[in-house]
Image 1 (tube, rainbow, N blue to C red):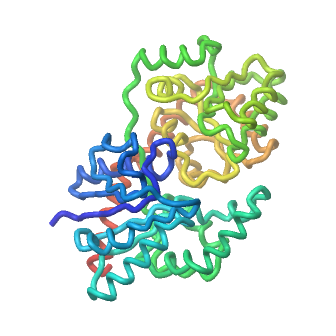
Image 2 (tube, rainbow, N blue to C red):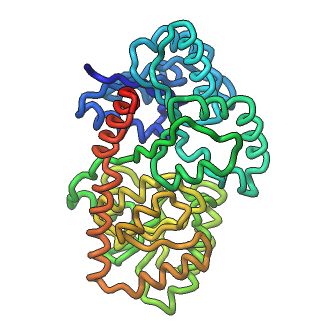
Length: 394
């Protein structure tokens, strides 16, 4: 009998990245092992990005307001719960979470049965979001929402799904009461990257001609304060003249006030380059061409770009605030640092001391760690086994 899973998410717009990209990565791998998936989203049915995926997306929006209230959700779920064995709510703090839970409770009460219900927070229970100075108002809002809505979802669903052990441990800190029935580390995965082609190198070269064959470290993410871009640039500027460091490529959208500030901060070096956002062949050309990948983020639930670098045989320099640091440390796949300027300085000094052999060896370890923990195929097997075990009373 085929297992059927429904994913409930506010939007499948690819520009949102994160959870919707994780769904797009996961579903084809699950299909390969005989698990059927559909998505329920609050997008408008005529959204331009719909109709391009290989799986069904039921768009019942548009949603209203910052809470993403979608009036059609309740009835759609009551009419369709019977088709599914499990439902995964993706994300907290919006109507897809409590709205789905409320409909599930009603269905269960009326039918004496219901699909398993899981909540996948995608890092939204990380204590960072309650402690960051710039998030004081949102932190208060989250406390109110927790007391009114989200604690009921988290503590009464079949289980809470986490992408790694660190996320699971951190989720216990910010809110009370926190008593989920099951804490389930199911992992997270990305597809194996396409094999290197010369076209990738050329496409990256077009985006970043200044590199011109120089060795470089790659930062590829949003250019945002949370990602630690300022401490990375400051640390690099501090060491560049004294240590034999490669060039630094900072890839991501720069058309923001913060992006412009970072370009100005980096103007003191001729070896820091901003090619803008990289996608497709240019992105893979950047990964395959770099010596290593660096992300000194102040908070990162998983870090898809980190794993893409590892899948490209590249060692990584990441902060302990990137939640997959334990697996990377265990796999000897890079350097783990603190999310401070001093931490980045320390990591860059260690990198400068590596010879080429050590960099290649760590790159091989990175690929091994990727296949062990972060391949989309392994994550799909984890989901299947977890859901089946719960269904069988294990």
